[in-house]
Length: 185
View (cartoon, rainbow, N blue to C red):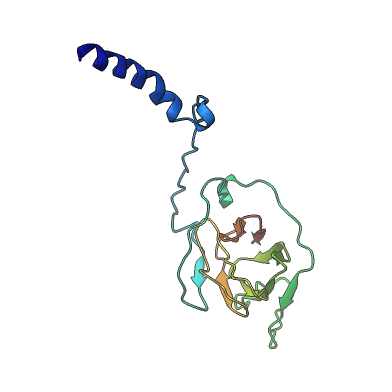
């Protein structure tokens, strides 16, 4: 009987590894790739623009990493197809006198066909950008220190920029959708 147990254990040891692989072949070890740890960039009050959301919505989390803030961005992207909404009542200021009551402007940006249009917007400090989703698909406007939450077809999101710099943003649902707001003095 002891001899039978020894033979059984030997056969079990030989057959068990081949029984775990498909078609009796040895399975390769799964490859392990290193995972990049996201780096969180702390927001300071001087970097955080004033946010005015139009709709309260759930805030989806976007991909981390490669977040640029005004301090680490050196490229200036020119704006194209910029549409500005001019205020109706413009006060006339004599030449050479500073206009202390300059009104902030609202710049319109569209979300359509899975793109931000225009992709690049140049504004002055205290101006506001209003993004309106014209796609039947939900999108977001997500930057290093702000997010719109889910914007459904027809929804809008406004954000006032109070500090100079370049603010890169993207759609956290469709990360290939990217845009830039350049805030000048």
